[in-house]
Length: 313
Image (tube, rainbow, N blue to C red):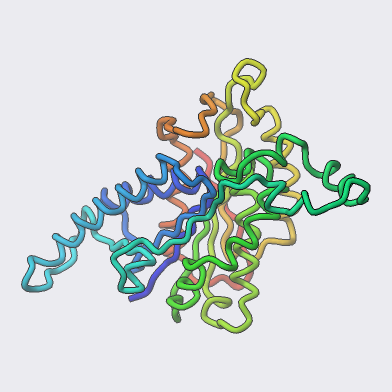
């Protein structure tokens, strides 16, 4: 079977993957590819993540019953639930979820061993210039709160040592593909996408990994958050466009994906509460549009040169 490894980075990655699963349930065709979702989010106990796992499990139950009656293999359905979803642990022939938790309850200051620096060490001044005291005291278990400078420091090390990344490299075969979903205006997605892409494209000892056709959808700002002055939130959506411009300046000339899709809104039409624990906002149409990029990508051939795509409605 040919597979597409779908890396779902951060909250937006999780929400777009939910739309992908629902589109597949509704009959969207993956062009013969088995979808292998891999969730990369530092939140240790995020309800959205549990909901996605539950959704994938329910999809698999329906799909498996449609292709097997318990004693023989049946023909694939032409309509609903016509494509397969498998998880990394299933590729490893394991029933338990071996996807290493990307997250930690320790504070960022502890992660970078700030306490080991003496009071007069000049690096203390460097750290205080790069990171606020609030950022240094935030536990990594709640994500990077819109700070890609923190995500860049933490995620690179977490990706390299993760069981799921080793399993991905082990199971990525000829004709398999890679697709990365992330937002560009937050912390986890904006830092995670370039890091993950680079680790895949620079995998010198794994030619099938390095040479896999790669696509990515990066979601531009599409919602706002209530005023942090009244909510006490650490994230100010007034900075989303500034962060997006900075990230796009880096993406230009540095990203290596064969197909890069840009999805977003002209203005922040929807405003949400910033609830780090629940993040139970209703699904957004932009997430559905972003999900459609995967199906477009799976129908395209390897391009002669890098392609940039967007969709206007």
